[in-house]
Image (cartoon, rainbow, N blue to C red):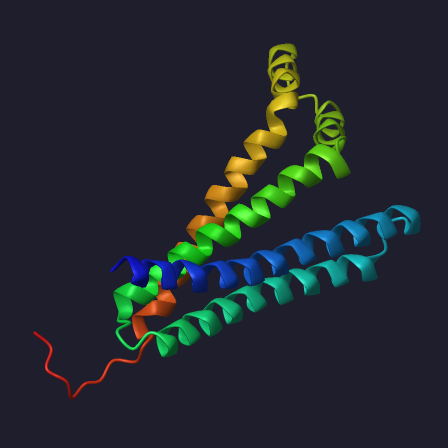
Length: 180
């Protein structure tokens, strides 16, 4: 039984690394496109490119999750739908941890002014009173940590829901077997 858990974690680690890598690659490319848009004045072509990249990341992650779930089901002859689902949730957790960790490093070291810039944009809105502005400024140093946990939970939930959907037919159900 312990060996079975190690096999699941081993396969999930590889899959999580691939899925997290795709998301990190998207973040880096969108960051570079943002830098190009600053110099270009924010051209419409760069915005369209960013949308296409997001769609490629989204569909690529779904495809990769399905691919790794199918590969795990083929590697483990005893894999049923529940075991494949558990594999998917572990993959989602590891992928989310990798991506959230990179995002934390990105907001802490590569773009430390990200939240300060967002705060500056919020100050232009007259709907915020002085107390709200003060509370937002007090939260500013905590924002990288908060964004880490929000990103981790969001990505893990997305991957878990995706795993639940995909694992229903992985491995395919045989209608001719006895099901009790």
